[in-house]
Figure 1 (spheres, one colour):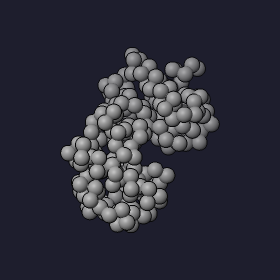
Figure 2 (figure 1 turned 45 degrees about the vertical axis):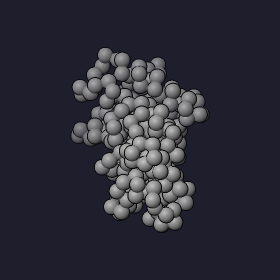
Figure 3 (figure 1 turned 120 degrees about the vertical axis):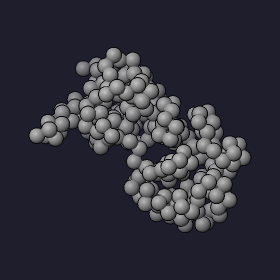
Figure 4 (figure 1 turned 30 degrees about the vertical axis):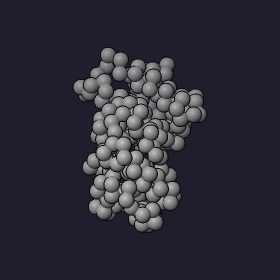
Length: 221
């Protein structure tokens, strides 16, 4: 099975198994998703959602975060871990938003990565899920490990892995096969989500496909 066929098989199988796959961070605005994504570094999304439930009631705008005392914000996000670094990053980022973007989260990768503490992974998460803009694929440690185990990339650098996955995404978009009427941009944006949903630790694509097909048969009984 070549890599293009393998990719299509993996994504179509996961699409069938997880048709409602979406970002698990809770948010109602681009700013909220930006903050939640920063907090999610080395922390579970479940824990982040618990913290942001109260955090988003207290801090409603970029200006609120920009004016916050780091010690107080750190206390508010303490349970997500690395709260000193995260509170510092959030305050600096929101100061940039206020000074350069009138408090609004920008809609381009170029502008996003210029914000303090925002790298491509965070920018991709926000652009793809808050603005429905497919600018790339968010590559974290899970994506890196899974991409290598599935044979989708041999690279170790996140940027190079993203390049490999983007090439596969474009191949997927160009295929004649349609998935439930999704348009190419939607398919591309969702591809990473379908690929990663609940399959960490699988040793290879062929075994993954067998497991997914077996699960589908069991679900249909």
